[in-house]
Amino acid sequence: MSLLRDPWPWWIAGPLIGLTVPLVYLVAGRKWGLSSTFRDMCAATLPTKSDYFAYPWREEGGWRLVMAVGLIVGGSFASITASTTDVAIAPSTVSALQDLGLTDLSGLAPSELFSWAGLATLPGFVMIVVGGFLVGFGTRYAGGCTSGHAISGLSNLRLTSLIAVLGFFAGGLIATHLLLPLLLG
Image (cartoon, rainbow, N blue to C red):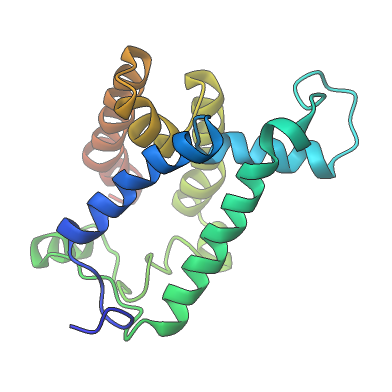
């Protein structure tokens, strides 16, 4: 296995992700999640009178912006050095998706849905636009995103994060087993 070319096994990648939480607390003394980083980015770049974005983002969130840049650089490096762009999908999942009418399962997402042509269809519009709105609304309503609650919040033993993560999983199951067949069937 080449560390730079092949995907890392879960038993290596998972603990490395888990170790970032104590590192963030140790270095910055703060919780971390991507939705708060997005708020910092908006506060830094959008002139607005909104109270939500009117806070000292340089002191409170400047370190998160640096971490977000690191995520982008790291993801780009992983993408460039990867030996393949295909995602390993279980044969049963491929069969289930083909039964729903999706044929192009190469790459990261089915192009029938996640492309400009797919956006012009009702299922593509619902998944991309309506789904994106619901994810943004849910992130704000839950007080954080999946990475913030599942990685930072759960490691801090926060009940609100446990409830949010259970909600994320329930929503994913409902979307997979009820909404996706309804939209594509």
